Picture 1 (cartoon, rainbow, N blue to C red):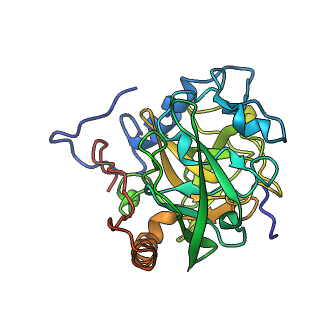
Picture 2 (picture 1 turned 180 degrees about the vertical axis):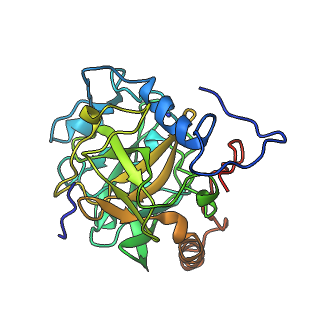
Picture 3 (picture 1 turned 90 degrees about the vertical axis):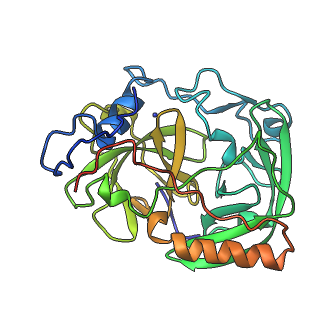
Length: 289
């Protein structure tokens, strides 16, 4: 495989003028991403897997329960990424659901080849198998499961196509994100959107008002395909997946292509519902341009 290595209040915009990226980030989405995450953590860091137990046998699935010690416990969206596969160890190469039936994953990984276990909000495991996938480009593939997942598992919205109206997409601006690795740790990911089509990150950087650098982890081999996220209020929003040690495809630039592939997969597999991506609305924050 190609290495890959490697969430206080909504600001309601009522007649507030747009601000420039150079102005103070008071009340902006950038500030929210940082302070929302920082309010949940401890210093020194106390990273805990988001689900337990954490053994490599099948008991990791049949006995699984959502951790009460993970810093992001009870955040909406955790079940959208499976807790593993029945015939593959740990949390390597996972997909993330973007509809009750469709998932996104890294092209160079093949989660559709394994039986995935999804742990719902009631600690009930739901098993699903991928039946088809289509490639989008830039290491993004769209897959479809053999059966819809219930609302208790759910799916993630994605960063919207107009995100640059709210987050400055330059090479010098970093924002508080969240990464995930094969040990089921959710950790600090300092995100940069300066390269069109990519989400990039640096474990050496920390965000002012956000998570301390000690909360960052380095992505490494086996972490491929696992999600890269934003924490907005109490909800996870999907941005990308681990592709290289420091970058992944920015789904916001691929929305039209992903939707087209989701539509085709639905037709090919005779779905009654034509699921499409849900773009997370950012209009509760002031535009920066």
